[in-house]
Amino acid sequence: MGLFPHLFRFFLTWWGAYVLGALDASMVFFLPFGIDAVVIYLSARNSMWFWLYPLLATAGSVTGAAVTYWIGYKGGELGLERLIPRNRLERFRQRVKKGGAAAMAVPALLPPPFPLTPLVLACGALNADRRIFFGTFVVMRLLRFGGEAILARIYGRGVLRMLESDSFQAVIIAFIVIAVIGTLISAVMLWRTTRQPRLRPA
Image 1: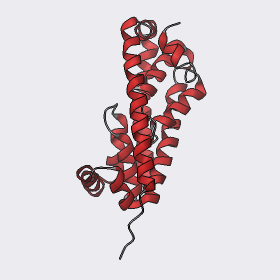
Image 2: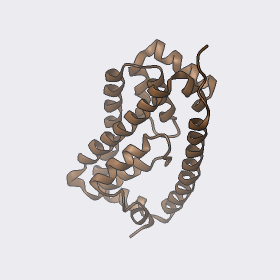
Image 3: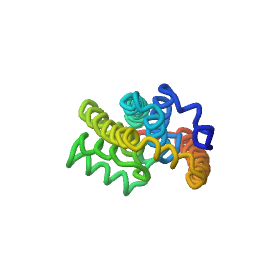
Image 4: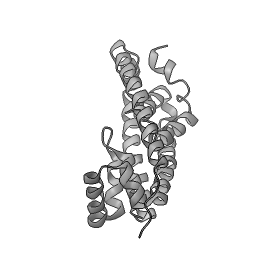
């Protein structure tokens, strides 16, 4: 067994795809391409159930995004300013005004390094329409994970050989290091933000 299935054994199940999808859309956990790699591997390994893993990953992503949206909603714009740089926050405000909730959810189709979590936080803080945002979010996630699953189903053996190759193992190690560092940084930033006193309106 290669390094990939060994390290990701916890997530290489139907429920693991859901859990990793939720973590991937959370504020703290950070693992670039982690959920994509799991969907691809599971779809290639279990070709009969390839259609199931995009659904589970999408359901998990919606769960994680819903929690992130709720945190943004509760924190409001003042809380958002502590988590997102001012210039990026202003771009999010303009995007909500011009394109609405649907335009904010479309980037859910894009893979890392596109910053999805700040965008979901901004939607919550700016009180973007939930039904439109999450409806679009679900469609974009299904397109992304579904496309990956279909390709993995078609090129199953080649995909498995690539994921278990020595070169890919080195990539896995690099991503794990990034994940640990990124998760620690995110946790510290969130902790500092929650420790700061809120400004009260005059």
